[in-house]
Amino acid sequence: MVDVLITSRSFGEFATAGSGILARARLSAYRPGPDERPLTEERLRDLVSRSEPRAIVTGTDPITSAVLAASDRLCLVVKHGVGVDNIDVAAATNRGILVANAPNTNTQTVADLTVGMILALLRGIVRSVYSARTGGWERVVGHEVASQTVGVIGTGRIGAEVIKRLVPFGPQILGHDVAPNRRLVGEYGLAYVSLEKLLERSDVITLHVPLLPQTRCLIGRPQLALMKDHVMLVNVARGALVDEAALADFLRSHPRAAAAVDVFDVEPPQSSPLLKLENVLPTTHIGGYTYEAMERMDRLCAEAVVAAIDGKPVPNLLNPHAGRERPTR
Image (cartoon, rainbow, N blue to C red; front, side):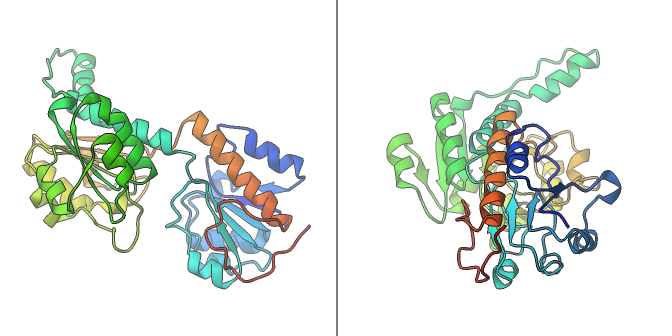
């Protein structure tokens, strides 16, 4: 038996704060080895059954109802990140298992990457680098940010930080959100419009919404059909927000269009049709990966684990009504 099962690949890999907190609390931890990965539902269920952890620090692993039921000792699942679409929160709540995450730890990091991707697409940076490295000298002609209309879908923490960073460049910025943030209208001149209007009017579109049943395939063939022939789409949120096959077809038939994709429906995305297209800038889900973000994320996750095992209030709790009384050390 162990205290903490760490299935997240990145917890403790780039920062020491979280591991130090667990060590000072004298909590035993287990990390699956390479031979135990990838962590499918079946493998993860067996691992939880064998190790009987009191807490799990997870990344994108499938924390399903079956996994949660594999150990009666389990009292907490904490996401080493923000989105918890890989965790069956309802099943955890029914079993009295607390679920927490690490909000606002990667907000700045993801916003930085988003703006970097927008600049890379507009100026054709990757294409220019390729030309220089392969002995060519193509003078790639790009666009100024100020001449663009940028559509931001989702204006929560990350979307708001993207808008804040874009304003000094001078583009027109459109927003769409089910819960508009009026502060952004007054402070940055953001104009909220319907999703259809945003898709029709934007030269650049960036996604910053969670993956929910109603947002899965938010960008599909009908939505792509509304976009401009030269649109540039950025997705650093969740892969399943976009119908990858539909986007690939759109980009093949619209060579002036482009996409920057940091997240895929299946990762690693070995069979994604997007990887074969020259007008796609793919990255390896690096949105939250800076040393600063990892330090914040590790610390919050470790603090949640120690609090849960000690029977104290858990920070960033997502299901406070989980009914089972938690064990203490």
